[in-house]
Image 1 (cartoon, helix red, strand yellow):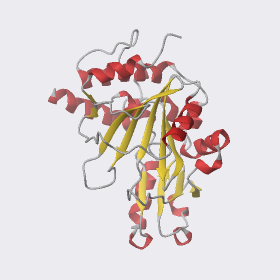
Image 2 (cartoon, one colour):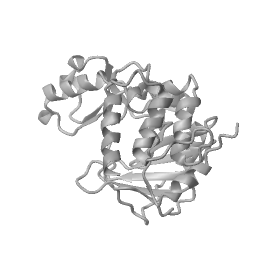
Image 3 (tube, rainbow, N blue to C red):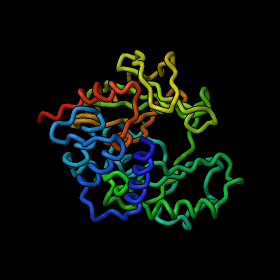
Image 4 (cartoon, one colour):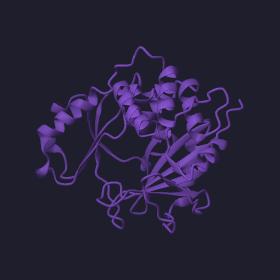
Length: 295
């Protein structure tokens, strides 16, 4: 298992750098899957949540999807769909880090890239920001195509851009609590409540059902808070998740509740790129049963 995990990291690392472009997406995913789990993936009759996610990557292609995962274009789509009041304000957008008007920015802000994930710089005090280091990091992000990492086709042709957002903080929790609504055929059935993401504590992912009952499974390596408080606007958040998930076999709608108001986070089609590590493992099958591929 240790050898496989090491080989998995090496193979995925080579893939993310574009060294395995000669492999088709299906072949790449089959190899990656075998290295991770030590068995062949069943794409003809997928059963688990992870298997069906890989199937959706390969065969469920809709021209709207790339727009919805582009962090800037998604904001326009969401604003038209549910209203501008749910959108976190964009302060600046551009294509080069050297064009960022640092002097004109507020003291607190968040820098993101529009074309990928895990590209966030949270600035709480502009006077302490190392601009040269920040620019180098952004420059590296802009050169990265996240398609090659897990063959999520929606990222392949996105135009890389920089987006600077208004800094948001909930006064009560002193952080942003991320509510990830797992929606199956337009129905939110699982909510992943992410807390302590940017603190020195262990990150917590607490899974609740649509009626805010604790489901009893965890993400491997992360904590959980069984009695976590239900957000004040939970019913509204469910309504938004239902509205945004119509017409999709599976989509994850990420929302925030900040100082009593609901805000849109992002939309995700392939949670954890189809390698969710859940414990007990039976939940991977249970969530897989929620994705209907019969049509």
